[in-house]
Length: 225
Image (cartoon, rainbow, N blue to C red; front, side):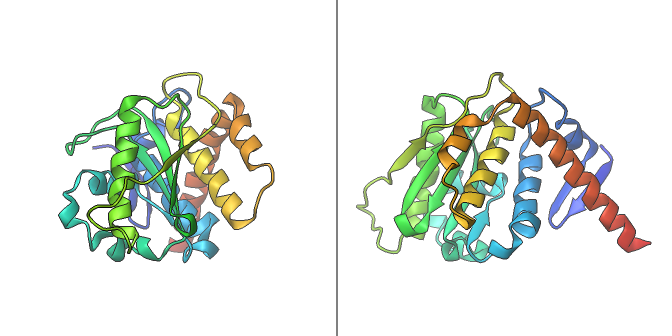
């Protein structure tokens, strides 16, 4: 088994995860789970009562679960107390896992609105995945939603588009950071920033995540010495 590089709260990163941060590699759910945890515990720690950065594996479990089993799920995780949910979503529609594309789903409680941020033109599978997850979230987050509720509105925002087949996960990280920053401190350039993400930003983000991992590892090692 691949060597453990870092344990950060509930996330264990191994060498094979770290290797995916090299250029042109497709990010797995573990890297995205790590950066969501880092956003929650470090970068946006002061907003923990307001923002939920959701582990993509939990999002997939929630998406594929029977709706009758979902009622206590958000309460246990505190989602029903948050003003903003930021959720990396895979296009996989099987409980066994898989999928080949990441996009970002955002829920704004005050507006009862879902937003999709996708670095590729939204296809049928992504739309199906996003719609199913937003529908199930509505069933447990909206106290007024009954069995005859209408399907929630899913607004697809115009975003920068990737130029290859491997960078979708990095775009999700960048979009998630932009959304959270705008939520905390209104950014008049938010929509321009969504559109202006380019390959240089993607490459820089891969390096930034590697630097974050190295810094956390150094901090943990220093605390042990």
